[in-house]
Length: 256
Image (cartoon, rainbow, N blue to C red; front, side):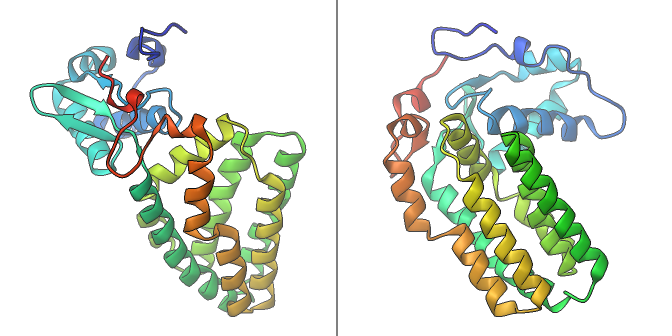
């Protein structure tokens, strides 16, 4: 796949072979495709997202394209600049920390309620099955599957707690978390063994019906937000994609 002088891959190549279906609205499908490209850094910070080009590539009118981009702006993934265009936003450390905070507070409530529902054998079997799949994914170093199962496990906590809708709400705030996770994987900053051990502790606390222990295990798993900031700041390769204190990086401010 080719890139331009700024290291950006052309939209036409990124969307080659993509076809929209009739099962969902055009806006939802376009939003989902662009969201995935941005979160995985195939569309990079600072890259122009042309509504006209997207309309041509998707064979769609500008209206669903525009609505999809507005949704991305609301999620903090796109900056719409009047009389200029729509650009992929840099990773914002403040937004990332807020997303981590939201996740921690909601998940504390979820695992505590899940522990109160530990007598639900079917739900516990679901947690155990996901854990077994995570072990298998880590054994073969399948990082993408490991990440997908990570999300599946945390979603299962909310289902076991009887509040699956809360997970859907939470997921809409996590775009920066997903981008940071992708950056870490791309730069081989991996904590698979620790993540797995943390998950085991959370699941076992839920099995025991111990809400306090489940909360403690979850807090230790997510970790202090200050530690996240230190880890990110110490890695110069990650910092080229990250906006701190309102100041974008050179790449983040480039306009192709």
